[in-house]
Length: 498
Ligand code: KIV
Ligand code: ZN
Image (cartoon, rainbow, N blue to C red; front, side, top):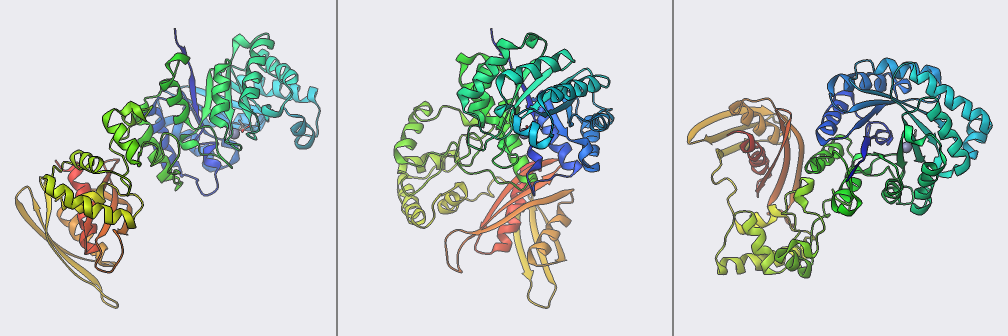
């Protein structure tokens, strides 16, 4: 029989505390809806007393989200609790998360208090929060460095006062996995009324042990984990949701399940990364660009023969196309052939030899060769079988003159033309394109790269266009970067114009 583990996502509270990563209310709603679709049980939506923005976000997220419990953070202060209760008024399921520091250093330096008084304040806060909501979570801040015997007394007292969940944060990310697991076990064994509450982990990653500590907590009896997407959070961050979800999915012997739809992990990770302008490190477990990218010839050969030789997770299980084998100078002909066939290109043996030669030359200059590079090398025409195709593009631009573009498109065999002026040649060309394809589309990302070096080089353009609340990725490659930009936009359009 497997046990259920509750996933409490704090991307929008602890995660959002990262300097420079603040989201506006509309963006927070977008993330909250994505978290709901991902299957999290609890969304910590903010700390309402901290700012009008946080207050408002908790209100709006409460309205927008249906299934997950919406949680609001407070200190053990009556005013905080009142404001949190007010912000949660539209939530279908609501929780107040209140608490206080319990380590000796917090008690002495932060509160200038003593252990008994802290227990009284904790109990009073929980009781007060219970006047507003039935679901109250208590956090013992810096529990990681709190003496276990005292922590057990605090926890027993707050459960007695009505706490439904007890959160044991390793606030400073100091604990070793064994130590954190033993702390949870100690509470399971020494808190008389522990069966009346769920124990939660909340681990920070200062020493790179957040996920290990969380798992140790779970293996010792915790049944809620507090996590963030991509492990974002203050300093070195929090436990990454995707890591815990995939550990449990991979290790069946643990027999603990979450409600996470793992195939949504990668899209949510991308969304959070782009909204927060916080790139994911390439080697980040589960969601990093290289997490499933085998570049050595030996690994690639093994994976092509049987994925299990070097992969413990199927990339599709986290919503990644299984095609992300990165090709490098060490890759063999077989890997290149496989990649080409995934991309729909089946060259003859002679043509493959030719592409392979060019590929090796490019790989000497460029570390990772991606799909777009390969398609350019293979001379594959991405616009074949596309509904919208560019027929011609003419642009006038320069210094001191307004840029003007005229564009001809072929849409399912019919010809269309438009001209437009703009703030630069790309803007003019895209405005002309939008005159023909008259839809509510917004350009969200736009990068231009050279494929190698030299002024006669092929320019590559990557774009993301938002249409109907969905993001579409497009690519264009051309020695003319304005044409490459229009191609990339058209590539996006072809993904939603059927
Ligand atoms: O790290 C921490 O202790 C916290 C609490 C406020 C829950 O984020
Ligand atoms: Zn925290």
